[in-house]
Length: 276
Image 1 (cartoon, rainbow, N blue to C red):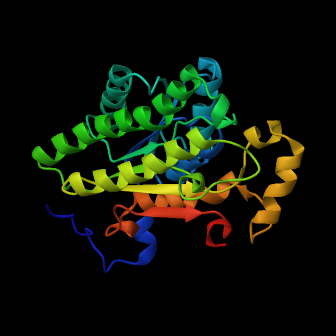
Image 2: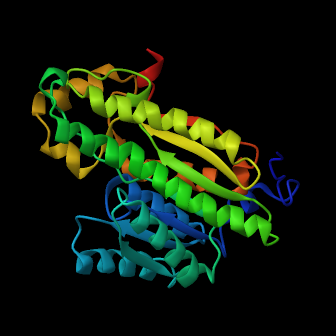
């Protein structure tokens, strides 16, 4: 097994982040962290597909059009996809590669996920299954579908410089308070170790890494109890929430050759929360 080298490591550093001509897919890319990850990849030059499940198709299409228009018409397309379905995500990944990359794909951001705050002693069977089906099983099916394309590309003479980026969570390495979310934490901890394992297995044709955000200022936070929202910044050395747009550079970094020797890593972005 050999990790591909940087194509031109002595080139000026800004060129290492350039994604011009690359093709990327971001699951759950219509809002929150996924939307900003997609925006960053597009701004770096990549053609990007975003997937959705609950967003209305016309709203998802509008988001794609706005992203494209804001970036000189760079191709951006939206696709309805249920990551819990192995067949659905496989078909979507192949469709994206075919329609945006003429059969080629460079980066997949495995971002689709859900959260729930339910005391563990009260957790129901359906709630547990839904959490794991989306956050862990769905993430694996997405990565597996991407890997099949990346492996095929290598066999057809590609350079093996593809990238898979999981959106995990700081909740995978610590226990948040005061909210109760043990199954969510477990799903993200498992996801982080899954990424490390895949990084070893797939080193010939893809780098596999995680990004683990802390408390991010997304629409979802506004729906949670005020007492939690007041408590959380007190626990973080940065004493504030992270803006979702502050994460986009990290996705560009892990998708680009700037991180050519990074695989199996978990990039924790939490304002110092996990160091306490």
